Structures are given as structure tokens and as C-alpha cells.
Length: 549
Image 1 (cartoon, rainbow, N blue to C red):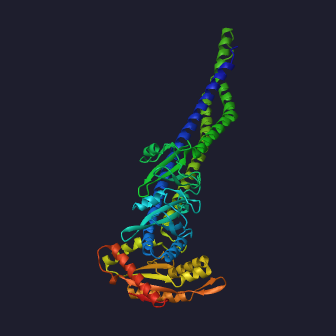
Image 2: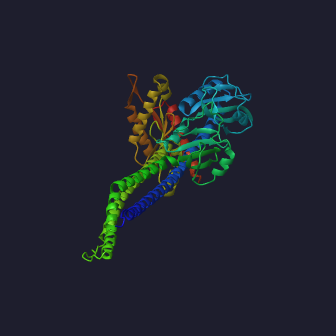
Image 3: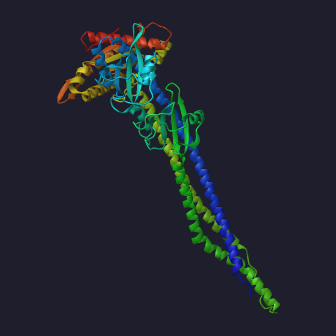
């Protein structure tokens, strides 16, 4: 009798190898498509984060240079009055949380007026001082403050008197706000973000790296910084190895005005490892299915396939022996159909596993939507005063020229109201900044409740507010200001157990008195100046009143 075992084993082996090859192809295809799709989404996310951060950092730098200009003008005015200059430096430092200190140094480098009260410092050896002494306005590379011992940026600008440099204005900026801008889009730690100077010195970084400290001062991410920067700075989002040797998707942007470099990176392996693990899970499930279900089925089918051949051999042997009594049985081919159905069932199970993997990719898309929401929140923060939730001064002053243009184009009136909380400095000095902040919040809430939806309310600075009133004449704006003044007089703030009454002075101006210069920005500034003059008159005449010019 012919040995049946070798043929059956051969058929089973071919079935098993074919199924195993099918599983491997499915796994590799899934892994390739999943990782490719993930990398494409990652590149888009990196590009979006880079654009948002670049705009936010450039806006921050422009605001700091504008603030330096404002500080320099006031410092020049007070240069000959040391007592007033010292008091003003202290006031400005308290007003703006990003300022660590403001000082004025003489041409020899001695800081003779300082918001910290320490007038024994000499900065003649600092590079920013030397540049300012040469007549330049500069922002330094990160340095360690000799007062606080913390990493800071320093702005320096010459002060002139009689056409000659009489001193150097030095403004020390802490790095907290820059770090907050980076962390706003990196709450989950999905990105590594670095802000460096053009020479490679780290200014601030994402949560994975601390702010520059004494040991890191002057260090670079890459020893061969110049060559790497020239290679990556002008390329699109691409894959490379970062300073730690990890594969990342990243983008480098040059911030021309600040002479800084913004680096946004995301580790490829973080999610790719999860996708590979999922692929191995699919492989494990497939192998278990092969052992538990397919192998017994293959054994059964191979037996059914080989049995007709075996019986045919036996029949020929019987004929050779002269036995003609048993005819040869005829078999159908339904066994092949059963095999196809079994394979289809296994394919359905593999498709279910693949659907679970695609659900994981959908979750990545949801995370991208969350990132977009945070970016919108970042935009809102850029135009909103954090204390009062009003618009900030920059937004209002950028909006006013367009309102002037609209009013002139359609022949509509336009008014501006300036508001100053009376005796606010006394409130701060007597009851402290917490009570002062609560006063500003309540004043802002009352002004907001009294204005129309079309009106634009902003915090102008300190205890001053500004209201743009489109389609409103000067007399109507004065009536609105008077109503707000009366309502404010009814408000009392709880100040350490005392009921503190409030009042405010109002200055009103409309577009009628502004010369038509054709330059909407100049006209907008003139309109604000006129409202400010009216506010000055209201305060000079005894406060708690409305004056219109």
C-alpha cells in the first residue's frame, strides 16, 4: 500500500505557507500605510505650529521694541530729575510683569538709577551696553542677571541730551512669557520647541528642556551650528535627526527682526512605535488563528484532497491483483469551496483588526482638531488684556484707523471715550494690588455692560480705558459717558472690610474736530489725543466728570 503521509504533509505545508505569506503582506501593507499617513499628518501639524509660534514671537518682539521706544522717551524727559526718574522706573516695573528691572547707566557703565534700588552695578563689560554706547538700539542674547541670577534678555538704547549720549536705558526682560507662548501649543508635550539666537544660543525651549540656566549659558544645541542651520533653515518640513540623535519631523524658521531661529520638532518614533506594536499584535492574532483554527482545517482538507488519489491507487492495485469487484468512487470538488469560505472568514477577522487600527488613526485626527482649538485660543490671548478680559491697547489702536476710514467713507459719526479711574494710585498704595486689580475688573464689567455690541472696549494702560463708539456723535457719546459715570458712582468695592466708593473721569472727542488728513492712522491718533486732552481737563477740573472737546 502506498504511504499517504508525505503527500498530505506537503499539501498542509503549502497551505500554511500561503496563509502566512498573506498575513505578512497584510501586516506590512498596513504598517506602511499607517506610518505614511501619520507622518503626513505630523508634517502638517509641525507646519501649523511653526506658523502660529512664528507670528506670536514676532508680535512679542515688536511689542517689546515699541515699549522700549516709549520708555526711552519718558526716560529722556526725566533724565535731569533723578528722584522722579527712580520713582518712574519702579512704577513701570510693577506695571508690566515681563519686566524684571529697568535702569539707567552713565557712559562709564555705572547704573545710577534702577527699579531694583541697587545702584552699585556696573555693566560696562556687557556687549549690549557697548552697542548702545555706539548709538545702537539692541536686544541682547540671553545672559544671567547679576541681580536675580536668572536668565534674561536685555534691551538697551542710548539716551540723548543736547545731541550727545548722556546715558543708556537698560530694560531687563524675564523669559516667562516667551515660555508660555511655546507651552500654549505644547500642553501634551507632542512637540520639542526651541527658540535660539542666530548663533545657536538657546533662549527658551519646550517643557522637555528647562529655561537657560548658568550651566547652559552660551551653549548650543549643535556643536557645528552654522553648517546645520544653513542646511535646515530654508527647507520645508522634513525628516532629520535632532541634536539627541532621534528621528524627528521638524521645521526651522528665521525670525528676521529679532535675529532668532525658531525650531519646531516632533519625534517620529513616539507614534510609529505604537503603530508597529499594533502591527505585531495583528501578527500574533493571525498566528494564533493559524494554530487554533486553520491548521486543523488544513489537515481535514488535505485528507479530503488526497483520499481520492489514495483510493485510486488501491483500486489499480486490486485490478493488478485481478480483483474487479469494487468500482472506483467518483468525488466532487466541494472541498475547494469549503477552503475558500474558511479563508474568507479569516480575511473578515483580519479586516476587523485593521478597522481597529484605522480607529486609532482617527483619534490622531481628533488630536489635531484639539491643537487647532488651542491655536485659536492663542490668537485670542494676543488681543485680550488678561486682567479685565477687554481688548488690549494694541488691538484697539490697530482697529481705530479702519473705523475712521469707515466713518469717512459712509459719512457716519465716530467718537472716542477715554476713562480714567480716579485716585487709583492711592487705592493701590493703601489697599494693595489685589484690591486694585478687583477695582479694574469691576470698572471693566460696568463699562462692558453699558456699551453696545458695536462699541469696542479696551484697556489703554494702567487704570485707563478707551471706548470706540461707531455711528455715535460726540453729544451721544457724552450722554453715554455720563450714564457710565453715574452707574460707577453707585459701585462700592470691598477693600479689607471697608466699602470703597469708586468714581472716574471721562474725556470725549468725535471725528468732527479732527482735520481730514487722508492718513487714517494719523487721524486716529489725533482723535485719541483729543479725547485724552478732554480727560486731562476732566481731571484738572476736579475729577468725577465728563468733558468733551
